[in-house]
Image (cartoon, rainbow, N blue to C red; front, side, top):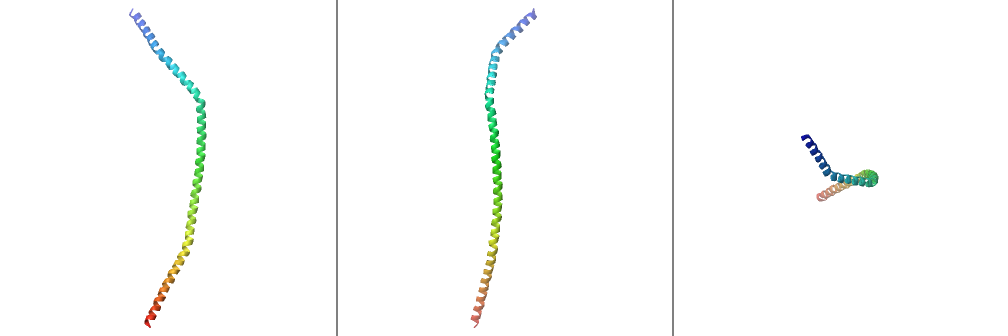
Amino acid sequence: MALKVLEITATAALVIIVLFLRPIMLRLSKTLKHADKMMQETRPGAVTVLKKAGETVDTVNKQLETIEDITTDTEQLLGKAKASAAALEKALTSPMAKAGAAAAGATATGFAVKKRISKKLKGR
């Protein structure tokens, strides 16, 4: 008899558990159907968005390559401009230095001659 009571109690408990879980399972089923429907609706849009994102990344990469080429060309031009400026400076400085040295020598010679002439005139 105790076994019979235990069986009846277990069956009743199982029925009660099923009754409590039924609304939860129904809500979960509706939620999963709704989520599935949303995924079905967004999948084509997501594929399009991902394709466009890939195209955008490709375009940005091409632009970055172009910018890299421009930067390299600019560096080369700056190097050539620096070399040209150095050559021009050397070309101008060398004759100027020679002319300056000649002028300084001529000035020194002029002062030396003037000094001698002064001494000769004073010695007279």
